[in-house]
Length: 224
Image (cartoon, rainbow, N blue to C red; front, side, top):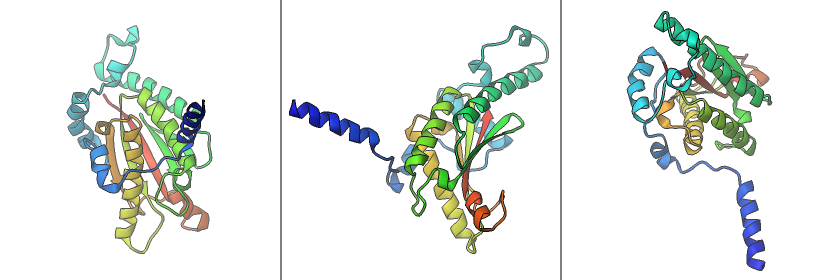
């Protein structure tokens, strides 16, 4: 009986344990197959055979075909399928992420998730926080359901004097987030990972704006 109780409490403590990133030297193993560049038309085209070879699928393969789309212009029909698929994904993310520091936006056929740093990482340490663990786990579960997509994981900082330090910090944020996803079932073959430093600020560089500019953005794009 005593052994059973000890095992029970160990299981509870294990379930409550905070996520801890693996040692940095192992990150390349978790991210094997990821692409470390911007996600654009050229890089998506180059990555598609790798993605499909790793068991990935296109939106057409993941969608129950509407009989109305069996005929007509193939490109228009494919775009219609992508719009429907990404609308479902956007809705799932929006409903699940009504939390401070997180936002979901639509950009054409892509879906953009903006996560300010404080919503996913410790305040004064480069580690996923307990709240971040919860937020990222929620996102990972949805991304696993909507797997006919590429994901760009981009890190950003606020304005910093040292551009190299800003890029290094933003890259750490992006890679740390990508490792989390890889450890939670998201195939690296879907991922593009990039650190953009202080580029593309989305708020003023005042006290509050700087907190917003420190962020990780997920741009999710349908695989056609």
